[in-house]
Length: 107
Length: 122
Image 1 (cartoon, rainbow over the protein chains, first blue to last red):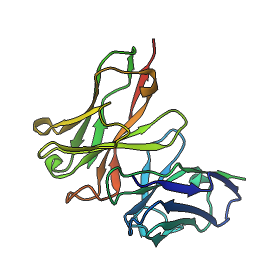
Image 2 (spheres, rainbow over the protein chains, first blue to last red):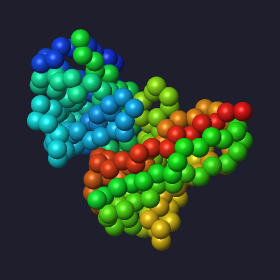
Image 3 (cartoon, helix red, strand yellow):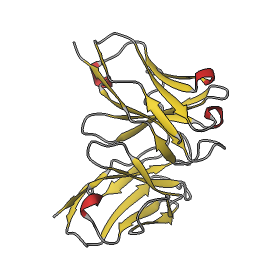
């Protein structure tokens, strides 16, 4: 199975800050990589797929990059409504492993 | 509207059996895989397995193989997750989810059910 490792596990940043979350796969997954946002008490929602394609309706302050084993999610200007846990997921092959999550809070 | 609607919360005792459901609507149910994801209290997302309702072909995570059964009834556009003997450690929120495209399951989940909370306690 492919292991997905996110860093950091949590972060606290100010409104307007640029936030960077990393995700590393234990083996190459090409660009079969998604990012999800889960707000407290809510259902996960898809932010980015194919490593860098923004899901319809997702604000442009979110962006993704990477291929192979190293991926990055960037929030260019953190907003209060971005408080959530963010998960990466590889979907190249079963089991389609999720990262352990990164909790984002407002400082 | 494309949606997945899951069955309601369940409270069970250890050793009991359980089958929870996920009904798809607004799209061709038999043409898209349906996956199941576990989230234990305060923890992250875990991919359990996935099924193609068109022919009931299912693939499981090794972590869940033999512990749960994923099935589907295409006549009523419903997928299921089943346990034969629950344990306290099965207490969790369970989500069903649909990949973005119907040609295989190597796609991100863009449609999620609302979740079914399962509590197993004596």
